[in-house]
Amino acid sequence: MTLAAKEAVGANFSAEAMRHAQALTWAATEKIAETIRPGMRESEALSAGKALLASLGMERIWHPVLIRFGHNTLRTFGEQSQDDPILGDDDIYFIDIGVMWQGHEGDCGLTRTTGHDPEMRRCASDAKRLFEVVREYWQTHGVTGQALYAYAAEQAESMGWKLNLDMKGHRVGDFPHSIYKPGKLADLPHTPSGGLWILEIQIAHPTRPFGAFYEDLL
Image (cartoon, rainbow, N blue to C red; front, side, top):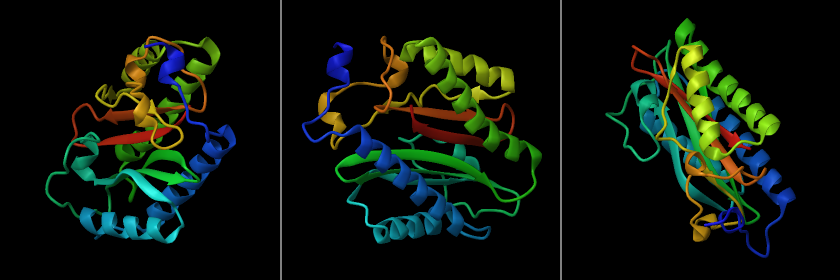
């Protein structure tokens, strides 16, 4: 399939609407993060997050809301959480939401910590930093999706983390982008265009049972 076919959009697509949807999705994610406190169960945070999204005027949730605590931060999008952990005073969690606004798909993810564990705090910070390093590499060198994730894995290792290559990034657009069956960003043998692809970064601690996640629009 050609890049043009993978990046096809509908008649109502608007680059401005995509940016607007992404901005609203980030604002919603930050609001959810503000509600999460130590002592909550993961399931409680998830229920509260869904309720908050419903109150914000979004059109629909286009992919399942994920909130992962502690050891579940190592789980990928397609995996179920293990148990129903309680968020501790020194703990880590991430949020991943996909929400539609004005017919366009917003998608973002972030990691937060609740205490002062230095490795958890660095892991959360480095997930975002790695995203920024990889995005700059794409902007500067115009590389393929395949080369982008190879570079991400190298950079993660240099930071002391392991990149989860099962989280490969994906297309977004006017809903539903999936009708174009574009595949994953990490498998793309072309240079991705801006405003249409989500770069997903999930890293894991080399020895301890936690990781961090960050994603945003390229």
